[in-house]
Length: 209
Ligand code: PRP
Ligand code: URA
View 1 (cartoon, helix red, strand yellow):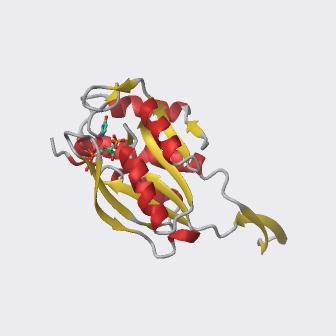
View 2: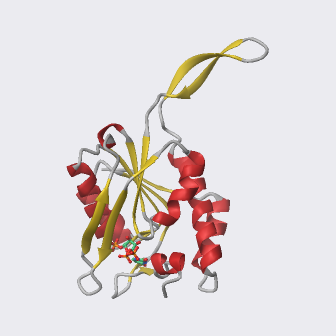
């Protein structure tokens, strides 16, 4: 079973509080999503493998440690996942970015795929699938299905808010995937929205409602 990591860093929790507030407008929502994603990436990349390297400082030769060359792919789930990409790229500027378009059918709440474009070498990359919200888990599980069908193997899922129902669903469907979240909320309401959550992440990011 994959591990679930909840980031309880005070800065992340503080920014999450402002993000959730219904009075926070689109500009601040976008900025906070970027900042929180950047901090989460710092933590989520903690276990990337390192190798010993010899370099020369202006003083003398030195043995130092650098990333082993494990390349990263960031795969946002459209639309709302896009809001997390810029902050992640600030930490891992060389990461390639793939895109998966999935939306929830408003009646059935089941995920519908409409777009998928991944780096051609996805099989050899550490893949970060990102979306601010893990509600039923349907969108995340389907997106990871698509990535695995195209060869992806080392996959991490990262989101801002997760419902217990979504965590359980994703763990059952993809037990090899670790889940990184900023907050675990109470439950889903009758419309499969996260309670207390933050509302519709895509709409709040892009000002569509
Ligand atoms: C939202 C959110 C996730 C999904 C989560 O997207 O960004 O992708 O719902 O719900 P689930 O865990 O129950 O699948 P939405 O379908 O609203 O599309 P959007 O990002 O284009 O607004
Ligand atoms: N998608 C959202 O944007 N918010 C929720 O609470 C659930 C799904």
